[in-house]
Length: 94
Length: 135
Image (cartoon, rainbow over all chains, first blue to last red):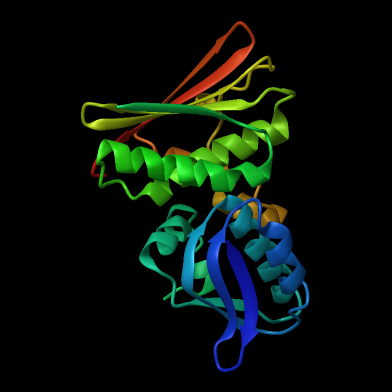
């Protein structure tokens, strides 16, 4: 199960498992983002390369207009995936 | 301890694959590595087989405890060969330049696996991954 929705004060909140079967759902919401935004990953349990691909596409699009995504509250097991992908700094993960 | 099952070549099978991995962990009493790492390696190879192989049959996934290692084996039947284990390393900078994630999945598997071996016999493409227990 995966969910992505805007929550006041938290930005976009991603919940559950962002695998290859859920990228359309994530992409539909992220395509509407037009300015800098935080993605709260505190409840994201899992991400695969397919999910990272959607985030990379969004980051590239936003950066081309001077904006960016910042991933916050990234849980250790998800953070490890971004580490293996060498994308921690690309998404501003502290 | 060994568990094997065949899954339809659809992305929606990923949920059933997760249940399969968790069932193996439950039956074998393995605590580490985190099952999400195993799930990730399986997802990356499984989706790669769906996207790039010309097969029509279900894909076999077998999990087996081998001493201090976990063996993860995926077999795609009646397809052309593709040697995952020998595929060139990708450069993450290049992935970002291309604005796509192609190649990232295999990169992640290679980072996580302790060993990968590929066999192609009778038009069956078989990748075996070894992951140290506790790692």
